[in-house]
Length: 184
Ligand SMILES: C[S@@+](CC[C@H](N)C(=O)[O-])C[C@H]1O[C@@H](n2cnc3c(N)ncnc32)[C@H](O)[C@@H]1O
Image (cartoon, rainbow, N blue to C red):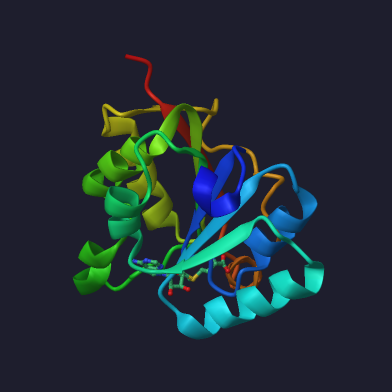
């Protein structure tokens, strides 16, 4: 990261950045941090680049790649300050739930990339996926909860995206979760 961004700064990685609303907003508002958008949807990446250009953000890079491979092979171990997963594809039909991103394997890869003082933040509007995320991460030896009560408070660094609005309009509750790497 130091070579890519030309400096040493906290690195925030968003997986499945979609149209880039959250990460462009964050990058332009936090010039002291570096940002990486990971996405497979090319039109979303194009939109992200256009919007980043308009805001003049210099601290954002994009990678068109499959997120688990980025976590495993592209990012150095213990290099990421925050990892964001907001509204990942819900795969809500029963026969498709095995395609979901947040699994025990994902937890292992996320923990590898995160710094020991890092943070994993997630949000979804699908209740059963929220429960799956929480069950998987509660059970993962690599992570511990960074919230009290049932769910984390809404992360105030998260801008309202079309996916959140759609979920809200459909009457679905938005669930936030936050986990930190477990202390050995
Ligand atoms: C439901 S959208 C949410 C986008 C954005 N986070 C938001 O809240 O508006 C999920 C995004 O994750 C991307 N995605 C799905 N699987 C991915 C993977 N394996 N690696 C990278 N991106 C992925 C999709 O292309 C899609 O843009």
